[in-house]
Length: 71
Image 1 (cartoon, helix red, strand yellow):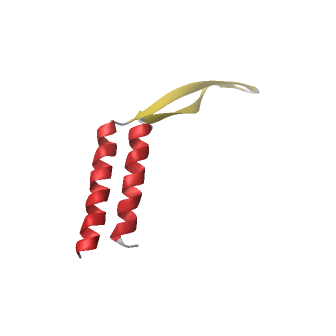
Image 2 (spheres, rainbow, N blue to C red):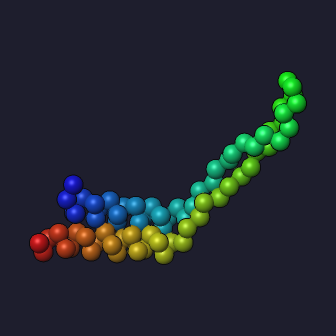
């Protein structure tokens, strides 16, 4: 892959990271396991990032595309 394709990918990923600043996911945790009886607990987790990370990805992607044209 050349740097232009990677730079375009960074720009697209940066835009998506600015629009969606995180996501939630659920895990199951076994609380009690006594013979045939099993009790599970669902735990919510959040993965968040700052929109600044998306801006940095966009700037880095544009830089990669511009540098590819100069070389």
